[in-house]
Image 1: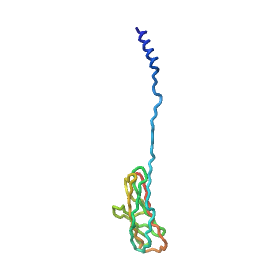
Image 2 (image 1 turned 45 degrees about the horizontal axis):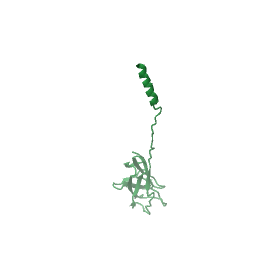
Image 3 (image 1 turned 45 degrees about the vertical axis):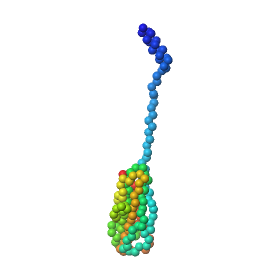
Image 4 (image 1 turned 90 degrees about the horizontal axis):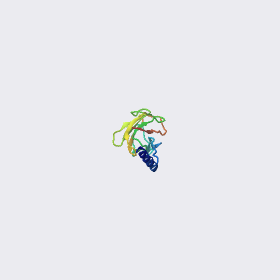
Length: 155
């Protein structure tokens, strides 16, 4: 009887064939690099001719567009010009340059980074305006460049 059972098992295994287990397995893995990027539009503005101790506001808004793929914070800073120091108040050879998000109030620019916007989502933008106060006194007779820089960082 045992020989009959073993013969049947051998016959079935010949008919079914050998059973093989997988010897490899693949996991498809992907990665997307973080992209931290912004663009500004327009990229220039001319305040025009201003006298000493004068104040003016930009007549347009500036758009800072999130061009990256992770939430970003936007920082803002100003610069000294060739002849004028950026200051919290206009004075002798010192000018004040203010900024605001369109929906907010003005704040003075500094030469260090200040937070302009936080957690800006991909493809979103923020709009800004500027206000300039010329020095109360200056020996400068050439055009000055009170530049502004936005910087993106990951939120």
